[in-house]
Length: 258
Image 1: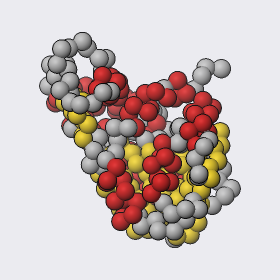
Image 2: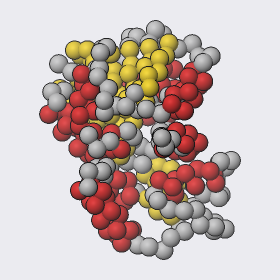
Image 3: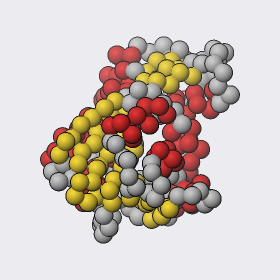
Image 4: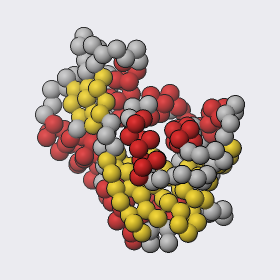
């Protein structure tokens, strides 16, 4: 059996997740928008190595629990290692999200950059809804590739942005029409949430803009640049003054279960 793809990409995931959030904006969402002011039980769909748990738990009141679901055994092993000496109560379950059947209820179901990679994304979102208690919250943080690509620029390719978008959209449509990922999913999630019965559905856009430049003080500049170019299906081209700018445009959608 072939190794699960994302089990081989832990370094890449860590490099890109570091570049997704401004910490002050994430804290603003947790404390001022979602207003988690008492202990909650969290389930993270497609938790990977536990990145969202690492960001959430330090901002929440003591007594919270964090359960992560993922199909990647290596990812979950890393998650267990990451939280091994932490003060937080965590549990990690090795499961395919498409076959997972919720049998416990949580106060929050959350995912980040997961649903777009699952053709049956609405079904998995429904599982998230079914995983929370009445009054619980569902949060999905997803990419809309068209929005993201319009916020990307690098000096290592000469192709015009409009030309690149036309080629990418042709690829994305072909993938979608053949049962693959939906490049527009991020912007569709709020609609799906309403269709699945969530109330007070709302959305925001992440404010992080990544700027990888040789003139910056970033000691991991080359690593970050390589990871960013990989997300754009571009190979790092040797260039004395290579740089890239990317507005991530993550669509953050959330709603409450009746």
